[in-house]
Every structure is written in structure tokens, then in C-alpha cells.
Image 1 (cartoon, helix red, strand yellow):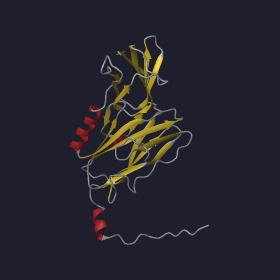
Image 2 (cartoon, one colour; image 1 turned 180 degrees about the vertical axis):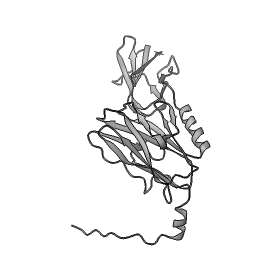
Image 3 (cartoon, rainbow, N blue to C red; image 1 turned 180 degrees about the horizontal axis):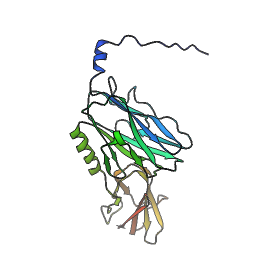
Image 4 (cartoon, one colour; image 1 turned 60 degrees about the vertical axis):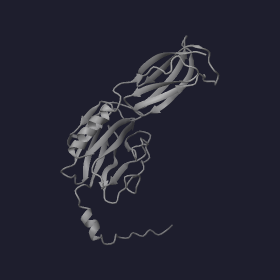
Length: 271
């Protein structure tokens, strides 16, 4: 019941026009195709007057249907995947974009590709780092990638863009800094009283359950039961069970379950 007025833009200033053609501004439209569903709504790149932090070109994630395929982005490299576009300032040339592919109700492989929406500078190189397979796709712009694994929590990738040296070294460093396999470290101190800590490593994101059992296999305490990002993590146990009661001295076991993998460590509580 209101009036909507459409107004044209005023004349573009000479300085804006001149800068809009500089070689280090570019936009990629990421495209995801499934057997019945698709997502063509995601954009990454650099643009004049954009912000490196959350800005006017960073669009929030669109609502999902009951079944869907979707590409989601974070902002500020915080792994808070709530955006469908991440357009950054043109003041820098090199950068890394965190990408998570999600799907529900899709039965076949997913095809991830890109469409150049604003000319790619000839000196700009782009690679796509697949966290799950630990493969660096240097021909992503020309060939795209096929995602064959299913992960309800999300399939993680990193798009690396910049000069050739940055892309090569950063892509290799990303994989070097991510654990190559699931691991549960020995608790420390051990024996302990009453608090101990344990490190664990995740090569991919997903549901993680970390549980303490007693010597006869009874569950004593669930320390973690949630979705976690890939990388290095630490948990602690204060000697209390699920009901908040202090357990007795003895032998206990920590068990990590993630992506069908199970790791166990023995620990001793002494009072």
C-alpha cells in the first residue's frame, strides 16, 4: 500500500570510473549442480569500495528448502558459515576464501564450477584446496571439480587467489597445517588428580563424540557431542561423571568417534 520510486544513479565520478578498471578487481560466480538441485547464488572476489570485513557486498545466506544443495561462505575467516557472497576490498591482491558445500536429499555427485562475472586479471592465479581429499585443483577455473563424498555437516574447501607464488605456497601450507588423519593424544598429566587434558586432531569437519568409560566399559562422562571444524582441538576432564559426581580412583578410557573412526586411550585417576 505504499509507493516505490526507482531512481537512476547519478553520473559516475571520473576517479571512480578510472579506478573501476584497475586490474586487481574481479568477481567469480560459484555454481553448484546436483542431481535435482542447484545453487548459483554465491560470489567471491574483489571490488572497489568493498570491505575486507562484513560489508554491503557480503550477502547473508539464502533460506534452504527441505532438500537442497548449497554453497556457504564465512566472513573474516571465522568459520561462521552464514554468507552467500564474500566480496573484499581491492586494496589487496592475495587472499583465501573458506567454502563449505552442503546438501540434503542429493543422491549423485556434485559439480562445483565457476563463472567469471568480472574480468580476471591475467596475473591472477586461482586454486581450490580440497580439505577432504587433500588435493589442490590448480585448473578449477577451467575444469571445475567433482565432489563425490557426502557430508551432512559440510564439505570444506578453500579458494586461494593471488599471484602465482602466493597461491602455490599458501595452498601447500593449508594442507601442511591441517591434520592428515584422526588422532587422539594421550591425556596429560597421567596419572592425574583431578583434572586432565587431551588433544585430538580432525582432518575434516563433522560430528565428534568424545567419551570417558570406566574399566568395565560403562559410560562415565560425555565430554563432547557436537559438530566441530577440522583442525587441532583440546578437551579436559575434571573427574566428574555425567551426574556431576566425583568418580573413584582407577583406570579409565577416553574414546574419540568421528566419521566412522574410533580412537581410544587409557588413563589413570589417582587420589
